[in-house]
Amino acid sequence: MKGETELEQFLEPQRAGFLSATPEGVSAAFGSLLSPVDSKAFAGELAAYFVLDAREALREGIMGWRDDDLAFVHPWGFELSEIKVPTQIWHGAEDRFVPFAHGEWLATRLPQADVHLEPKEGHLSVVGRYPSVHEWLVSHF
Image (cartoon, rainbow, N blue to C red; front, side, top):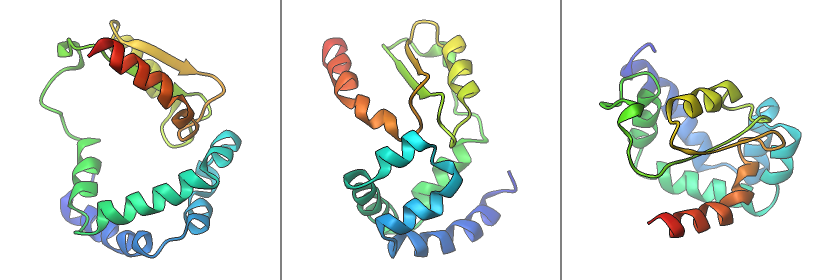
């Protein structure tokens, strides 16, 4: 909300931490953001994948991360009501990263979407639903 320059000044030191992170360190850094279901999901392979993915994403710098964060607070250039392609929404009630109310809000603005508001899932645990997402994609595209 304070603008691109302040965001970059915040992200750059975070980048250094991610480039040297371990799965255990990232899990500890997430702290209270990990609900019990997400803590369980983030153990092992997913944590290791996240660390490798973050290193690759940040290898050249913070530009992509910056742009994603700025997209949270700026218009996207289209209205949700303009989306006409098949769409899915997955959101877990145990998500501590993104309020569950946001998933509910999206669902009301995309009435044609295939909505999965999951009471026992979190932010990361929905990764276990990827096979269902892949089946849905294959059947729709």
